[in-house]
Length: 124
View 1 (tube, one colour):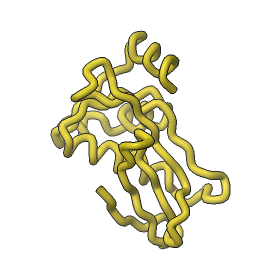
View 2 (cartoon, rainbow, N blue to C red):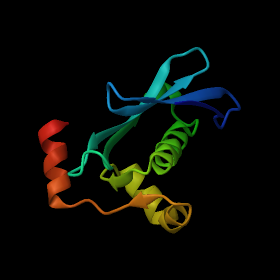
View 3 (cartoon, rainbow, N blue to C red):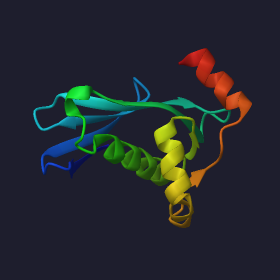
View 4 (cartoon, rainbow, N blue to C red):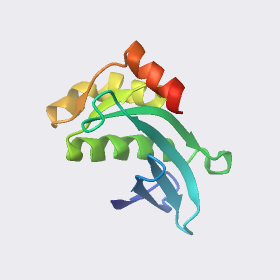
């Protein structure tokens, strides 16, 4: 999966799913990877993803890349029928703000439990 978007400056960026690193990656026009949204398999490894850390390199700050990255990770998870478990504050905030809309569009998410946090601590 690779999708193209425009950032706040109008520059082209791409978001891709990287199963090897268990992340969604955002790259700028020249191909430089500017950030990642990392996930782990949840207790039900086939149907859940725990999003635990999102980072965008400082040099690309202010371009709205983290918002694009989180939105696309959620969209792809919805399309795959995967339940999102937000631990990363960016995912928590996005789902607090737009969780009802996400669910209305067929997206699934649930609040993180202690068991989810234990998975993050043991694998991240």
